[in-house]
Amino acid sequence: MASHLSILLITCFINYFVSEPISSKAYTQLDSNSSIKTDEEDGIKRVLVYIKNGNGYVHDNRAASITCIQKIGKNNGFIVDHSDNPADINEENLKKYQAIVLSNTNNETFDTDGQKLAFQRFIEAGGGLVGIHSASGSERKWPWFTAALGGRFKRHPPLQKFDVKVVDADHPSTAHLNETWKWEDECYYTFHLNPEIHTLLAADLSTVNDSLKVDYPGEVFGNLFPLSWYMENYNGRQWYTALGHKIEYYEDPTFVQHLTGGIIWVLQNKHKIDYKKASKTLKVN
Image (tube, rainbow, N blue to C red; front, side, top):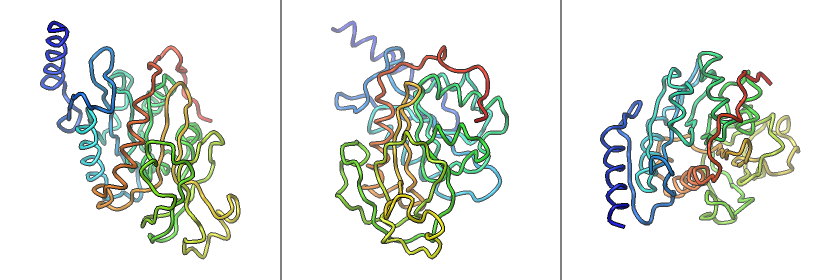
């Protein structure tokens, strides 16, 4: 027992002082109450928060989201690195991670087909994917990406208060919520929805002030429209929330718990990442 404990302490010491995060100090916490089980090889999970935006609207909430996820990592025993450099999306680098968090990425978030292939192979190998808010507006010309995330941003009415219905309360990202969550945000309408999504949260459109909703989404889903969902494809886990526009949301306990539950659920995937299962060619569709 003492020998095993010594090895664990040495491993933690090496990871903390030797590993070099991409853009910021990595946060590590190991305790007996950690929500994340330790990785068999290096003893700790690691996620990459990626925030690159292409030409177009750039959210001012990205720094706040990084700080928020770093705190989530510290409280739940996983390392958080972050980057806005698409050069970091390469296979050698991504092999360090169990999940990628696309936090408010938008438009063309990768610069080359090689970066797209590295991202695709990570997901197909079973790497986890978390998408926050405008992540659904990323890579709009790449259908494979849209399907992998679950849907693509189409538009939103003005930011306002509206009711969010909890469709599935048996998920870590929604279990803390009441049946109706009264929230202020941009009500994202997505399209090209992957039929494999399992909806967790939905906007009650009867509470959304939007003169254009008769055109889209109309009555596609009646008075509800999906806002958060999960999938379990490629032996990995994918989780998305359309919420999270304002900076201050990333300090709101209810929203932070929503994010925490989603990220932890993704990291708790029991399948190992296996690049032998990933395609060697870029999938356009």
